[in-house]
Length: 313
Image (tube, rainbow, N blue to C red; front, top):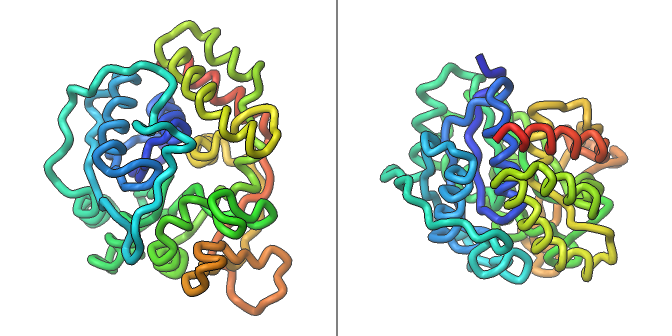
């Protein structure tokens, strides 16, 4: 039996796609109960499409995909086509999905699943803006104590921001939703830019994906090659950071990561710093810790795990 039941909440995005593939390649550790799409990197009509395309690439048409919220709670949608391409999955040429989109709203699926499954058995894995998760909490607060944990990619402390000088993209897109999730009291594990910017797809690591010789390996190599052009120009780095697969990797091998339990608050008032994750890394306030906030990663171990698992698909 898999060790963990999860719901992946996502806005694919090339790195989201790799995170989904890693989860689907790890059935001994992870059971994917469903995938909920949210507007983020690209609009909802594309994120739900992309999620289904990735499932079909993995040969997992049994995975149920649901469309969730198409806009943030209180702000206009900000997207990232400049990073991911107009479709969100530029790089490989993937066929249009044939597996159906589920009729149920993604938020209702989250609520129903948490109410149906034993309390403390389901982990939520948000890879994009937190709109779906926050909406579920608002509509059904009884689900909050039933959540095993929330493992998310978002925020930053030492790296500060990647969409504004102060904010990481996922949190900036819907800071009001992030504030609800971070303040809900559910156990939180956070993969910020401080970690993900150390998980760089170098040329050698990308060659290892391509050398798998499978449709999945080749597609991942093509995704990261497209994805990296933006980051290499922006940061002067030797490759693109694989943000979202850090979430899945932590579920499989948490020893690859290290961090601290700290208090994290979300800025929702100032337009200058909107969406900033104010992480009390040094413990200078008396605010109670609410998140395990990661600070470092064994990048070689991470890519070894990723390559080994992708080879299974």
